[in-house]
Length: 176
Image (cartoon, rainbow, N blue to C red; front, top):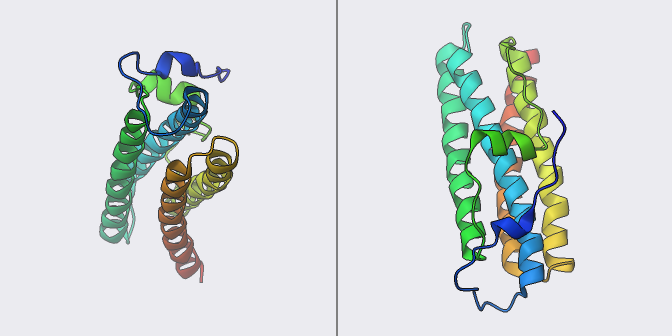
């Protein structure tokens, strides 16, 4: 599937424009950033749930609970990203086809890897998200002059850094 360009103009809410000191053109840029992030976050939640449902082995109970904690935290992130879009006067996309169309993360349909590969795949996805967030935070501030979204994205980046650290620590522990 070829990734299509996101049409931001259709995501701007037609009702009353928020008067929050960010011009519409800048809000459009930030809404595009947040919408692509929403897609990435949703795909990452789904991948984590897939692995939560399909994990097996001697550490099943521990990993099942661990992955549940991670996807619950990411469910909250998804909600916060959608609410940030709405705060800026945007509309949130909310269909599976749109999420998969605009995500930058790789899915693995039909694949049921071993536990180590599951955790490594999740670590890779979190680290990719961290790199994206790092660039998006700078862009929100420097290009679109939206310090609120900059701060918001930095907070999300820190959450993903912690989740990545936990995955990395588990992988390190289990490889010895």
